[in-house]
Image 1 (cartoon, helix red, strand yellow):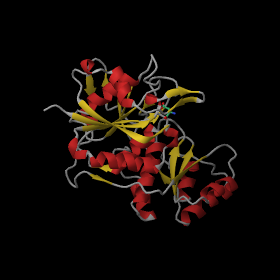
Image 2 (tube, rainbow, N blue to C red):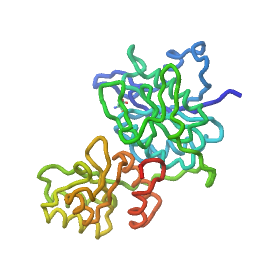
Image 3 (cartoon, rainbow, N blue to C red):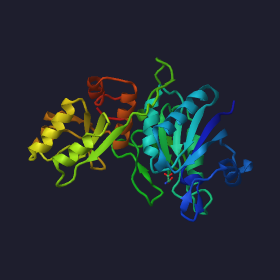
Image 4 (cartoon, rainbow, N blue to C red):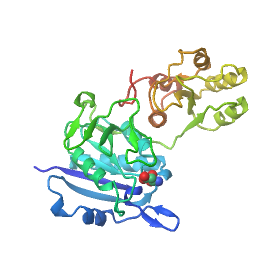
Length: 337
Ligand code: ASP
């Protein structure tokens, strides 16, 4: 029996049209796809049903409610389709593919995010290739996880990052190999793919409106600046540090601010500002000082994935201690242990 894919169109460049203030989300994706991919050109492709969200967004407007909408939609249609494609803006696609990897637990079907750098309505668009590739991958029974497909690269959704605003190669997976590549043939790196877990069965976990904050170290950062950030209502923060997780250990007031915040129950996870690499707080004294102040090392998790992981763990209502412990545990393939 031929396979059927459920395609969700959330907005993003792929469906945008030019306006006086630049490209903006636009509807009628079905008509656009029918024009670019007429039925006689669909040989070898699966059938698909397309749902277009009422509120199409530039993905820089993404909010937890949007994640809840996408994940619930997939869960509601889970039994009726063989796979899922999410058309999404590239700016925050890595956040959404990460978040859905934590919300859609124990998947045994592919969920593939894609989009484009140039809208489908433009002559040089990369949208059609990305869509067709994602559609083909969404039929592949070897894939049981949330992935991001872009310009021939198949990446784990919670390992991908937007790395280039200009190239068609907009995404990479800096700390984990690509899961596959689409050239003349589509080749998957099967050893890396997540295996389906039958128990518990596929289920949806919610993304409550709890939020996570991100602070970034910079030369000359003061204790007051950091304190103002950590005094925000967020319960968990990512602190983007230098190199393998180093910070200004020569500033006792700053370390004291961190210690007071972690003693008060704030969760602070150390991730590196480097595009590639992992945090090991014990490599340097400047990193050990952060650990002594209660900061937790986030290993090689990307900022996007850690943001969503913390969001997920907070949504589950876990205690501070449980969350501190789970930061270093692999939940959905997001870190290398
Ligand atoms: N601003 C757009 C968005 O994220 C960029 C894109 O889709 O490429 O929605």
